[in-house]
Length: 505
Ligand code: B12
Image 1: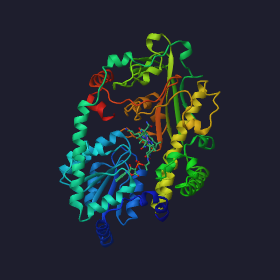
Image 2: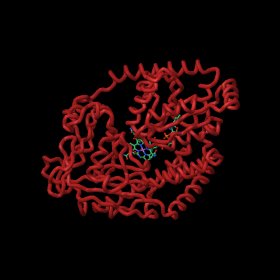
Image 3: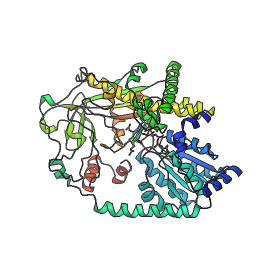
Image 4: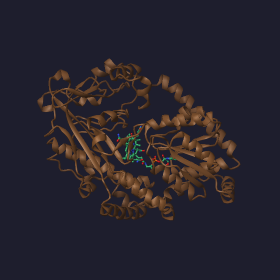
């Protein structure tokens, strides 16, 4: 714990100074009997690092933290709150479907008559989500905590004598956010009809020179050489995990964070070598390349006999744009349309650092070594992203155009190469259910141990999946809002219920 505390200083120091009174009362409460905070990542979600950091910050400020781990059902959370006589409950989630799971959680808690303060956190959670979707369903106090550095102040205010005014202040704040959100969402979203957006799609003159084919179609399981993959690791997010802002390698020389960053890098390298030497790691990479054509927002994926084996349903931007020549993008536009008579291709991938990272992190945690536990998980995430970058490079080589690439690591990280690899859940394709298509196309369940949870997160946590688009004009974009017409057309074509489809976006 001590070491973790030392490295989590950016989260400890930034603590907004509560009034001296609150501080003093918080301390008294902490010293006499440690208040208990139960924390859990909700069912179906595997997110851990952020929650664990919050746990360490609270524990070192005198709180008793009962961390239930990841993928925790609502029933188990409620049981733990009662059994542990918790004063507060923290819920965490990484991806959009968890936001819905949180709604279910707070509704169940309300039904049960619970009213203890809820702390909401995790990458996709927000004040707006808390205000609009969660708060109306729960009678007790509810606070969104965007950063571990804020959690101690929030907790001590919830326990201090200023509790009532703090809770009222937050409640009023969320009421205002909700009102403004609800009124804005009806008036501010000017969208163009789908038919007009289609007319303004990106213009590509399709001919043979515009389509891309790999040296071989099919599904490939690529053995991983960790020494090769480590060159593809982007270290910047590793430092962000620890609250050190900046980009690697400059951060090592930063006036503010340089010393800390260097110490962390040394620890990371030591652990990375230890992990490699342990021979326990079993990273997995599956990539597949298929003949394909597009049809409006769809990509038709063919098998070797030319039969459609899967249809990928993407969405087209509809937000009205000021400039006349603006395009309304859709990922399908980067694949040759059926009408062109040309056969193009599309790819998909799943990479995972492997469950061993979670196992090793748990071993450290059980030995009370929070620092190394968080470190191992952070390295697992870096490896997962490194594997995705490496697999994309191998893919570009299979397509030929990668063979002449001569990019530095930072150019690779800035994606200065041809082609994109959008992941379901990211802004160009926010629909997490597209992972189901990847799973089918790549036969992931038969070929690997990476699994989709009930809310379509991937287990092990350090995993990434996505698509490959090869056209030279392919680029990332933010889908933004779409209208009901497009959504209903997509649901009808996919033969899925709108309520089901909405869950994953
Ligand atoms: C690192 C990262 C990953 C890592 C793994 C993260 C993990 N295992 O938890 C990897 C590379 C594996 C990954 C994969 C994916 N990711 Co990702 N990822 C990120 C990234 C860049 C940072 C998240 C992070 O770890 N931050 C560092 C930690 C310390 O911060 P944090 O989690 O936010 O936690 C802080 C606060 O939120 C708060 N907090 C957190 N929990 C709690 C709990 C309580 C009680 C409290 C009080 C506070 C609190 O305190 C923490 C510390 O300050 C975010 C983008 C972003 N900027 O947030 C995308 C992001 C979360 N990923 C995203 C997506 C879509 C994915 C994938 C689905 C992509 C794909 N198809 O493969 C997968 C899913 C992985 C899976 N297993 O299912 C999206 C989610 C969007 C969405 N709408 O769902 C994001 C937001 C990127 C984006 N802009 O679209 N990802």
